[in-house]
Structure formats: structure tokens, C-alpha cells
Image (cartoon, rainbow, N blue to C red; front, side):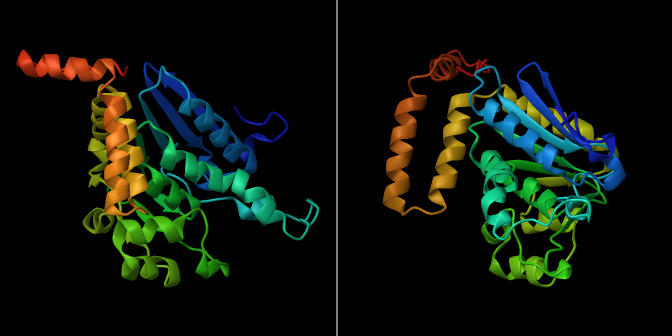
Length: 272
């Protein structure tokens, strides 16, 4: 799904469905999987389609090679052969590209599992933070390099980081440019867990299998309620939970869950 008019060096995002799981692989290892405009467009299009695809029950996002994603490729995107952007170009363009990817990962009513090897920097770090569960291999590094490059943070990092790790640690990453190891990221609550490199693939597969075999509607509503609760009062959250409960109780999976409980067996959810 890459742009046919771009050279191969521009990279691509590999899109593959395996049963009920959508696999997205950022594939540009020669530039540490930095994102080109075409790659970002692919993510926006694919995630938008996934949000309304009833056949899907989980999303897997990872990078090809030894790194996850080193952010947006500003160097290639701003070379001299391209015309100088007009004033206000970022304000017009980014809400519909890079920022839209973060919003989609955060709001799509499917569980998103992110697998991180090597560097997760800039927008790559935000992609990992916006996922529901991020598993990092030993040796992975999470880094927000914005200040060291002379510009302010973006990709939702100022919203995501304080909520995950608190304001003090968020300042350490965003204002001091602290690089966070996989072990430290788990300890801080930045990610779900870190594992030895030889356990990385199996850990992610097991997590995806568990989520994809769960009650998909209830999982999506739970994700929505958690996001809503980040800016709601207790009363508002209780009201949101009430409506979500009404919806989830009307699903086939709810009936299966009750039947399994009565029959003292494991439920077999169908995502309906």
C-alpha cells in the first residue's frame, strides 16, 4: 500500500490480515523505520478502514528489522529539491496525517498491541504509547528527541506521557530528552512489559490471541470508557459505563459468557 510514485527508499507499511488480526509493519529498516508522508497516509487509511471492519478483533503494530520507528523523516521531507512549505503548512496538514494516526490508535474500538524492538523515538514513541498494550524487547529505547532538535513536542506526547507516567517523568523525557530503557519503561508504567529478545514474538502472539478471542464489543467499549474517563467526572464516567453496559448486554458474547459461567466452562466468544 505504498505510493507507487515514491522510490523504494521511501519505505512502506505492510498490511496483512491473519484471520481476525490486522498486522501492520512499518517497513523502512534502512532509515530506522522513519515515517515518510506516504507511510503515514497508509496508516491513516488502513486504521480508518479497520475501525469499521466487523471481521477484525485486534490490531498488531510493529517495525521491520531491528527498530520499531524513529519518528517522522523530517530530513527527507524537507530537502532542497522540494518547494519551501507555505506559512501554516504544518497547521493545515498534520492534523489529517500524523496526528490522525495517534487519534485512530487511541480511539479505534479494537485492542491494539504494539511490539517494539530497538528505537521508538519521536512519533515512533507516541505510536507505542497510543497502543493499548506495548511489549518491548530487551534493549529497546523510548526517546522524545524534540527539544534536542530545536522544536516543541508533537504526536500527542504532551497528552499521553503525563497520563501514563506522571508530570515529573514526562518533563524528564520531553524537556531533558531522557532516553528510557525497556526495563525502566515497564517500571514507570509507560509500557505493558519488556521481555528477552527470544521471547518477544511468542509474548506478542499470545497477547494478540487472547485479545482476539475475547468479547470484542465489550473490549472496545471498555477502551472507550477508559479514554472518556481521562477527562470526565465520576458522575460522567458512571453514566458512560451505564450506556456501555446496556450495549454490551445485548451482544451474543454476553449470552455466551453467562452460559459458560452456568456450565462451568471457558467461554467461546465470537466477537459479536
